[in-house]
Image (cartoon, rainbow, N blue to C red; front, side):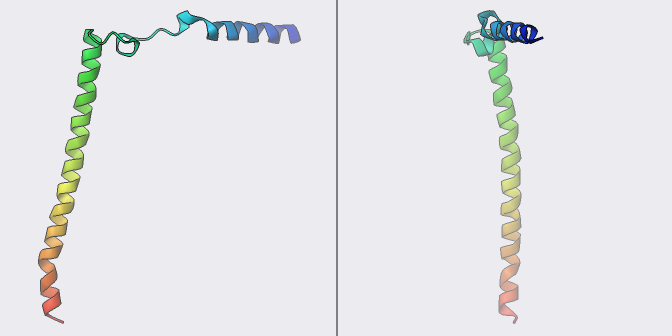
Amino acid sequence: MKNGRILVLAVIAALLASPTGALACAACFGKSDSNMAKSVNAAIFSLMAVIAMVLVGAASFMVFLSRRASASAPDRQNNP
């Protein structure tokens, strides 16, 4: 029983230490001129553009609300 556990742990350690288990795609491995790397970069920039548009929309809505609130504020100050 104890020898079986040691054998299993040795096999797991050997698999984790083997260099062939650490293969990566072209985008991660460093071949930055491949089509896959270009596609991944385009996808990242597209998602960043979508996030930026959402943030600009939220900020412009906050500016709209601020301007609308400040436009009605002088009416309340003049009439006590």
